[in-house]
Length: 81
Image 1 (cartoon, rainbow, N blue to C red):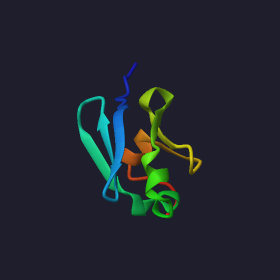
Image 2 (cartoon, rainbow, N blue to C red):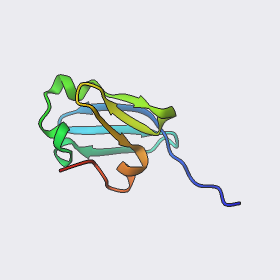
Image 3 (cartoon, one colour):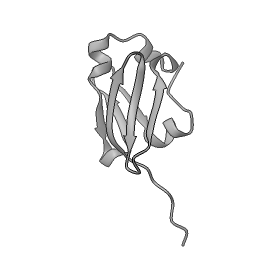
């Protein structure tokens, strides 16, 4: 049996046009909100309301009905552009 590497988000926040995450292995990942249609068109208040869901495997913006998986972000999939 081969074990899969799984990274989870321990912390996530918005700052100056970027979404930041601290992963379970302590790496910091970031991406610009401009790469996601819902985030790009949202207010700062909506973008700042970010949650970590599904035991750290996803990020959620409840005000925008937007969810992104940590794996997808690591693979460069940021939602619709």
